[in-house]
Image (cartoon, rainbow, N blue to C red; front, side, top):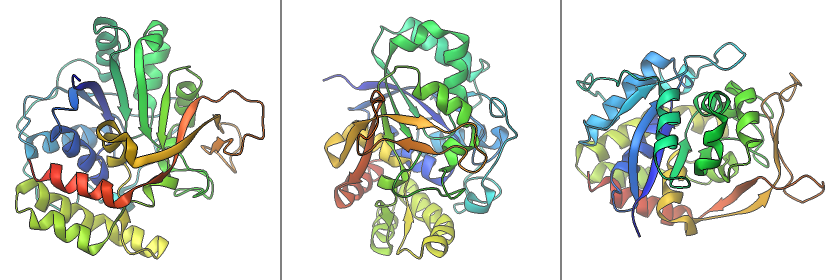
Length: 313
């Protein structure tokens, strides 16, 4: 089977970085056409920088990286330096990137790629707010039916919210963009907090990354050393959740995940529950299912895959 063509849309973020590294370490399964940066965990200037730093860490300096939207569709940008540090990649001491950003805007790159690749052959993999994806869909609606699938990290249902009592960060930052994407009709796979909070980097799992001895493994261990301090304190958990690598792990071994095909609506009007992903998990409405909403993960299998692949870099 040929490698799956993907565009990674991201706001790195340590866990975004690990997701990118996993994809780059898996060329037999994943063909990265390009990486598009969006404002989210930190402002766009930093997410675009961080994406290039990770490409160089992985030994992939020729990967095409594009800068996209620097703010949500209709809101002020909310960032998360309190989790990821002032750079978004605090922890390892990585050199400034030498590779250059491509000149094209990320939204135009997404549009052009979907227009020129055969229909149904490109998967979009958003790891941050959905601003770039929604903007592309609005600007060129004809590309929507050409998307093979969207596999995204975002949302929550049973785990409720991590930035408000009801909302997960990626969706909360740009709920209007999320609403556009979830109503687009594209096949969507969602990795919510319900899954990612079961993918915890415990001390033995982090020791395994460090023991790999390569630059990528050591950097991953340093990244999780940094950002786990926030999650362990917040959730009183034995480790930090690795959110975004669930997306790329799904592309490689979908059998690691289980979920339900349900209706998911995005709250965009109530300030109390803004950005909530209202998942009809129990099928209590007559709303049409529009997303495969994952609920569980084989965490041991996930970390085995992640550790082996990071060791390839």
